[in-house]
Amino acid sequence: MNEAEAILMGLRIWGSIGAVVAAIFLTVGMDRIDEDAQGAYVFRPLLIPGVLVIWPLVLWRWYLYESGREHWARRYGPPRRAHFAVGWILPIGICLIILSGLTLRQTWPADIVPVQLSGPAEVRQ
Amino acid sequence: MSVKYIPVQWNPNKYIYDAVMLLGVGLFLYIFLYAAPGILSHERPINPQVHNARAFGACAFMMLTVILCIGPLARLDPRFLPLLYNRRHFGVMTVFVAMTHAGYIVDWYFAFSSSNKYEALLFANTSYGQLAGFPFEAFGIFALFTLILLAATSHDFWMKFLSPPVWKRIHYLIYPAYLSVVAHVSLGILQDQQNHAFTVIFIGGAAAVGVLHLMAALKERRADRALAAEAAEWVPVCDVSEMKDGFAKIKLLANGERVAVYLNDGKLSAISNACAHQNGPLGEGRIIDCLVTCPWHGFQYDVTSGRSPAPFTEKIPTYNLKTEGTRVLVDARANRPGTYVEPVPVPGGVAS
Image 1 (cartoon, helix red, strand yellow):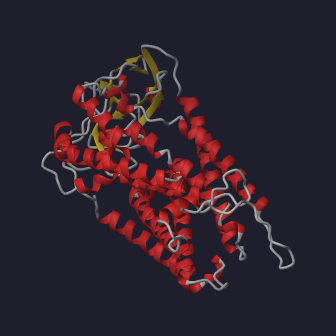
Image 2: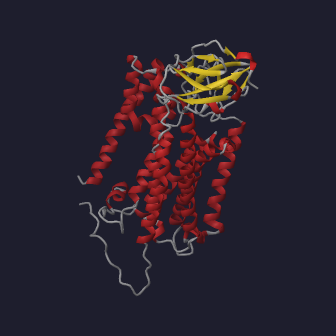
Image 3: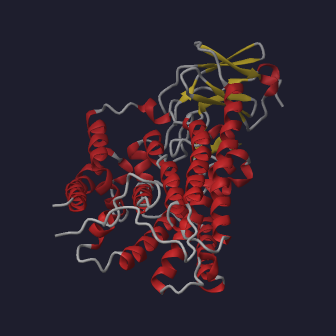
């Protein structure tokens, strides 16, 4: 198995576990922890992709609600300070990336011999 | 704001928003595919598959750029708040456009490999040790996965289940995703672009995102310094004469919480500044009939109890208040969400 196959296999396993979690959580779990979900069924299929992706977090949050460890005060502290970090990182990052791209850019007149930058790609056996 | 969850919350305003958005996407694709295909270097002999891939990719970039401009614009000028109101639908539509771009790419450049096309996508170029010829597809894959994650967790259920701060932290991934898209374009199509109209659009769009975020961050930093309070049991908020009926004064407590203190019919009430939905800034909303409306998505709360009007069930913390002369002081310890607090009469009816 090459690295690409391993990555795809990992994704399949992750998604399969997520599917099991989704089946249990969307049919049993959410009614126990959210009164607004009780009697509401049409919206549940929309949540399946989310559970497939973040199922460990779903299980953790479900545990917090079931065990009563979810503290109400934590719900009202938005991470607003991150705006300041983002305000600097985003413009600096954008400038650096675009400048790198423009610096690397090659014009390719017909009289310049192509140069192979890397070895041939990995080929599946 | 709904009593029971429904798949998609639409109302007349959202229909208009979505219609304008779809029209914009259609117009963009029409221009790039048919009216002025040269903008994407389409004057060169390429097939419809590549033609479509470039148009949808450019469209996804522009949509993401506009989405990321809306947040700082709304923080800089409240007149842009209506654009924030339905940004979720904008984001989901962007994911579909980006997936269409990825579909065209994978089904053309990697579909004729002897191995699985997704495996081919991953191992076709593994020159991760060099910038020239870097596998820019990896940036696109990361950005696409992130956008799918954000769209998949965009339903209101997720905000309540994960809690707004956790949900917000996950959705901050939009920033690395955007940087990733910029890298995807810079190391990808920008290397081969012959018509520089798109180069200008790309650099202009990305620069707008960067500059607007910087401006909004600096403005917010200045405002936070003015709002910040020393650690104390009772924190001074302002003088009653500074308050205006129906509006709030916001105070940033030493523990990082924000309190919105309202003057309503000559009486003072205090609630958390963070809406239960997405932690929107309630203190920037206005009171009508004892209810304050969140400027982000229209959730409403009674300022005396922190409860949404029946049959809605949202609750936010309240705070105790007292006056000393004409000074308003707030108790730094929040009450549990939904706790009724008797409004405090303004001494001598000083306020306007």
